[in-house]
Amino acid sequence: MSAAATSPWHQAKIERVARATPRIVSVFLETDLPRHIAGQHLDVRLTAPDGYAAQRSYSIASAPGQPIELIVEKLDDGEVSPYFHDIAQPGDSIEVRGPLGGHFIWRAEDGGPVLLVAGGSGIAPLMAMVRDWAGGAGSAAITPMMLVCSARTWEELAFRDELLQLEASRADFRFVAAITRGPRQRDSDRAERLDASALKELIAQWGHTPRHVYVCGSNRFVEGVTRGLPDASLLAAGMIRTERYGGAD
Amino acid sequence: MVTRGFTGRRPTAAFARRLPPGQFETDDFPVLAKGPTPQVDLATWRFTLSHGPRPLASWNWAEFEALPRTVWQGDIHCVTTWSKFDTRWEGVSIDDLLAAAGVAPPSAWLLALSHDDYDTNVPLADLVGGRAMVATRFDGQPLTAEHGGPARLLVPHLYFWKSAKWLKGLRFTARDEAGFWELRGYHMYGDPWKQQRYSDDP
Image (tube, rainbow over all chains, first blue to last red):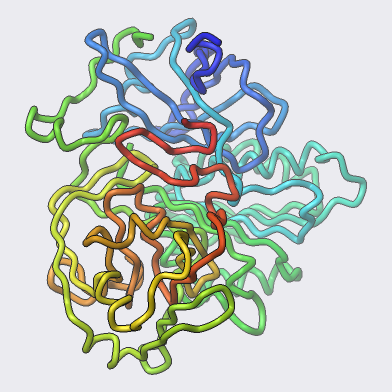
C-alpha cells in the first residue's frame, strides 16, 4: 500500500473565506472527508516551502452532511490564524485530518433538552449542533434547544443573524446573547459576564431542565460558567461537557 | 504539500530539538478537560492502588504527603499540539508508591482513575523506573484544581492526556484496557515523538 493511501491527511480546497465578525472569518472547505458528527473538529496542517509545518485543531461549525465550515479568530501573535485571515484565498489547498473527537458531540438520538453555552469563537462546535438540530436531525420528536452566546459586543456575535432568524421561526429554539462590553439589544439578552448563577436564571426562564449541557470557550470562560454549575437540584456534573480553547491559535 | 503563502514561525534551533513533531512551544499552561473542574476535598481524599476491584493499598492525604518525595523538571506535550518547557513538578514516584504498598506488580497494565470518572491506560513499564509520579505540587505550589489538583498523574514522556487529573487511584488490569479518550478515537499509547495522536496512527 502506498504512503498516500494510508496517510490520515487529506487535501482540502479553500472554497471561500468570509468575514463572520470583526475578528473571526469563516473558512469553507471542499474535502473528501467522512461525514462528521456535530461537535467534532478537524486538525489542520500548514506547510512552509522548507517543510516546516504547523498543526492546529478547529471545530467544525457546519451541520453534518454540509460542506465543512471552520471559524478562525485572529490572534495577532498567532502563527496559523493570520494565514486564514490575511493569506488564504479561494482555490488554495491546505491539509486536514478528521473528523475527530468522540465526547463533545451531539446527535439527534442523544435527545435533550439541550443547553449550549458559547464564549466567543467557542460557538463553532455548538453552531454545528444548532444547525443539525434545525435541519431536523432525522428525528420527528424535536427536543427544545437553548443557545447562550457570550461576546464582547453585539457585532462580535458570530452567526448572529442566522440565530435570530432561527429563533424567530422556531418556538422550540431560544437564543440569548450575553454582551460583556456593550449594551444589550433585546430585553431577552443580558449585558454581563456569564456565570453559573446567571445561567441558572436563564434555565429557569427557559422552563426546561437540560439533559445535555455543552460549554465551549476559553478556559476562563468555561471555568466561570461551570464553577458552581453542577448542582444536585438541577444539573449533575456528568451531563455537562466542556471544550476549552487553550492558549493556541 | 506546501501551503501557498505560509511561512510559519519557527522555534529556535535549541527549542526545535526539544519539540516533538507537530508541536509548538507555549508559555501558557492551557487547560483541557471533558467537563467541569471537580472540587476535591482533602479531608476525604483517598488514593487507592488496586488490582481489578481488589484494593492493594490506600492512603489518605496526610499519609500520602508523608511518602518519599520526588522532583521532576522537564517538558510536557499535549495532543492538541502545545508543548510547555521546563515545567517543575513534585510528588510521589510510582516506584516509591509501589514500594510503600509492599506489593509486586500483579500485571503489566494499569488504568489511572480520576474523580470525574475519567480514566486512561498506561503500561506499568511507563510508570516505573523514575518515569512517572503522582504530582501534588507544580512550580513549588500546591497543584491548582484546574491543573488537576490536589493530585494528578504525571507521565511526561507520553501525551499529556495520559497524565490524568484529579487522580484517585491506579488499578492494575489483566490487559491493556482503553480509557476515556482511547475509547473515543485517541491512541492507546500516545508517544509524542511518534505522533501517536489518534487511533489510526501507527
